Amino acid sequence: MRSVELFSGCGGLALGTARAGFAHVRMVEWNADACATLAHNGARGVEHARDWPLIRGDVRAIDWSEVGEPVDLVAGGPPCQPFSIGGKHQGNEDSRDMWPEAIRAVGALRPRAFLFENVRGLARPAFADYLAWIRAHLAVPRLERRKGEDHAAHLARLSQSMGQAEYEVIVLKVNAADFGAAQKRHRVVLAGVRRDLGLALAPPPPTHSRERLLWDQWVSGDYWARHGMAAPADGPASAADRNAVARMRERPAEAAWRTVRDAIAGLGEPTGSANHVFQDGARIYPGHTGSPLDEPAKALKAGDHGVPGGENMMVRADGSVRYFTVRETARLQGLPDDWSFPSSWTESMRQLGNAVPVELARALGEWMSRSLAGRLEAVMPVLDTGIPRRWPDQVRP
Image 1 (cartoon, rainbow, N blue to C red):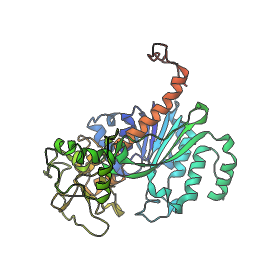
Image 2 (image 1 turned 45 degrees about the vertical axis):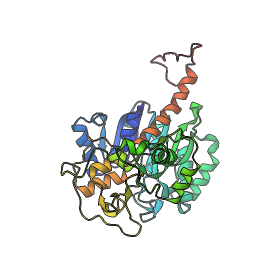
Image 3 (image 1 turned 135 degrees about the vertical axis):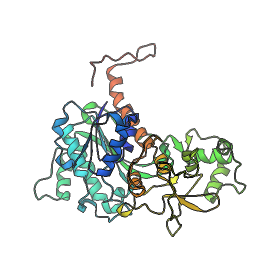
Image 4 (image 1 turned 120 degrees about the horizontal axis):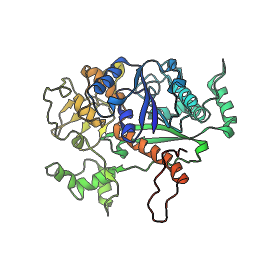
C-alpha cells in the first residue's frame, strides 16, 4: 500500500510502517541532520531506506497535488516540543506546531487512512481544547479556518459539520513497551479511516505485558536462563512487583515486555567502534536516575537544545551509571545494527530521542493494514473451503 510520511526524523516511523507493508511514495523532513541520517542509510543500501523518496524541505511549501496516484496512508510525527512535558508548553502558539500541516496533507491527499504520533503531553488538560480541534479538523480536513478565525470559532463550525465528516477518528494513549519496544514510552496516537470505506477502527490489543515479564523473571525463571545468569536473590525490586507475582496463577498470554538487557544483548561494553563509543559525564540527580537493566528503558529524551537528559543512561548491577551509546540507544528504539548515524553523539541522541520506536510503528502500521484489509475481505468473501479467494489485481476498494 502507498504511503506519504511527514516529519520523518531519523526514520523510526518510516521503517516500522515499511515493515508493516507500506511503500513510501513521498517523505518530507526539514532538519538537515536528520535528512543526512536518512540519506546516509539509503546510500548504504539499508533495507527499505534505499528506496525512500526523501524531500528535504518545509512541509508548508509542499504541493501535495504532485503526489499523483491515490494514497492509502498519510503518517507522521508532528514536532512534539510544543506539547512536551519537558518543553515550553506553548502548544498551538509555538511556531513549531505543525498539526495544521498534517491536517492539510490529509485534506489534500484524501488517503484511505492516516496515522499520527505525538507525546502524551498533548493529552494534558492544558491542551484539551486544541486536541479537540485537531481531532475535529482531521474528521473534516477540508473545512479550513477563515481569515481571522480563532481555534474556538473554527471548532464550533467543525462540530456543526460532523454529519458530513470524511473520516472516523480515534485518539489512543499507548505505551511502546506494550507493543514490543524495550522502552516505557507513553504516546498519543491519532488515527482515522475514510468514512466511505465503511470501516470502524477498534484499538489495537497490546502484544506484550509487564505481567508476562514478571512471570518469566520470577515464576518460570526463563528470563534469567536466557541471559545465562542466576536470578537475583532479593527477588523483585518493588512491593508492587512482589504483590503481582504473588497473585499469579497462570502464565499471561502476551509476550514479555522487552528489557534493556534484552535490547543490548551481545553488544558488550563500548568498544570505540562507530556508534558504540563511551561518553563520559553520566550521573544521577533528582528526577534523573537512569534505566535498570532488567526493565524496559525509561523514555529516551532529546533534551533541550539537543543535549540528552540524564535519563539516557543505564544503571548497572552495581548501581553505577553510564550513558547509553548511540548503538544501544538505536537498539532501544528498534533500529537495526546496520542503521548508522553519521553525526555527533549529541546530534545522534537528539534524533533518537525524537524517534518513534520501530516496534510501535510496525504494530500500528500492521493494525492499520489489517483495518484496511477488512474492506478487501468484505469485497472478496472466503470460499466454503476456508481458503481465501485470490484477489484479482484490479480489485481496489
